[in-house]
Amino acid sequence: MNIKKQNISVVIPAYNEEKAVSEVIADLKKLSFVDEIIVVDDGSADLTRQKAVESGARVISHKENSGYGASLKTGIINSKNNDIAFIDADAQHDPADLIQMIKYTGDHDIVIGSRKAGPHSPLWRRPGKMFIHMLANYLAGFKIPDLNCGLRIVKKDLILPYLKLFPDKFSFSTTSTIFFIKDGFKVKFVPISAQKRIGESSLRVRHGLDTIILVLRMITLFEPFKIFLPASISIFTFGFVYASIEVIRFRQFSATSLFLGITSLLVFFFGMIADQIATIRKEIKTK
Image (cartoon, rainbow, N blue to C red; front, side):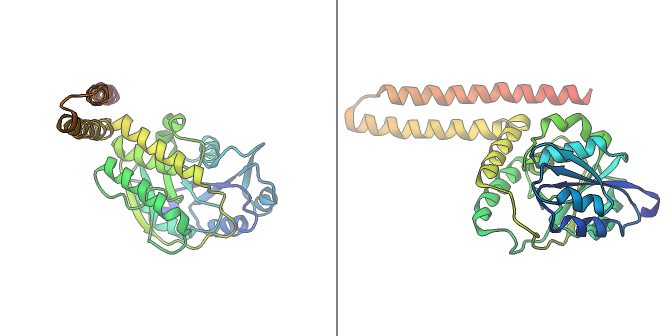
C-alpha cells in the first residue's frame, strides 16, 4: 500500500496536557498521510487549548470535563476522513508508529497498537490491569495483546453506529476492543513503542472499577453463560457442602440450604435466557 495516497484524521483527546500536546502535534505533522489533526480539549484548566491552537491543530472544546471516551466520540463525529487515528496527548506514544499501522487498514476494520510490557505503569495499577486483562482474555478465548492501547486506527463508517454502546470515560478503549473482537470485526494488533507519559495522569481507582463492570457487561452481552454458569456452579457447590455439613451434624436441611439450591437453579435459567437473547441478537445482525 502506498500510504502517501491515503489521508487520515487524527483525534487527540486532551485534559490538562499543556506540557506535551504541542510535541505530539509537531510529530504528527511530519507524517505525510495525516491531513487533519483534531484536539478535543476536555474542559482543561490549563493552557492545553492555547498550545494546541498555536501548534496548528483544529481544536474542539468541551465546556466541562466529559471524559476520555466522550472526547473521542466528539473527534470521530467531527472528522472529515473515514480512517481515524486516536493518539493520547501525553507523548506516551510515538506518532511514527502510525506508519506501520496504516499499512493494515486496507484489510482490517481496526488496527490497535500493542505495547511492550514496561515499567511505566504505576505499581498500584498493575493488579487491577492484570485482573481486567484476565476477564477480557476469558471472554475473547485468547490472549489479547493490548487491551486498552490509546494508539489505534478505526473506520468512521464502522464505528459511528456503535458509539452509544461505548462509555464516555476511560474505559472506552477497553470496551471497544472487546466489542470489535467479539462482534466479528477484523482486528489487527501491531507492535509499537511506548514511553513514560509527560505530566500527571488523571486515572483514578474508580475508573478501574468502572472498567471491570463494563467488561462484565460485555461478557454478559456476548457470552452470558461465561458469567452465569460459573456463578450457578459456585452457588450450587457451596449449597451442597453447606447441606452436607448440616446433615452430618444435625440430620436435617435448613432453609439456607434450600435457598442456595433454588438460587443456583435460577441463576442457571437466567443464563439460558440471556444466552438465547444473545443468539437472537447475533442472528438479527447477520441478516
